[in-house]
Length: 171
Image (cartoon, rainbow, N blue to C red; front, side, top):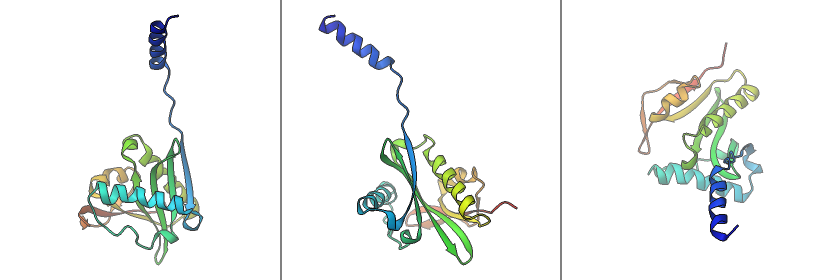
């Protein structure tokens, strides 16, 4: 086979080969288990989405990360999604926050997978407790699909319209 034919053959095989599905890995991490490299990566990820992309200069470092559980999603080992759970004691409640998906992974189901994992974890670990979150207004239908209902009027949160939402425990 000469070089010209080999090149055509290689190009044909490359386009006809099935694409590998991305490998998605989820991991729950406590703040104290994060390495400095992981913490920097998570904070940079959140800043890139919530501060830079959404043009919302808000104080991301709110002193709630230390008591939170952090759910990290990696696609082919690259950070692609994140959320945190914050259990509170008065009244007993679990807050989901900082739900973020990288731009290339949006509309691929990763956000849904993050929420499903978070809700399953809440059901197992915090059974009977209501779950709350602050949703960007355009994402209200997404959260309603999980059973969340709006509990506040829309409000401005550093230039981004939000609404409080809650999911009551079954029973």
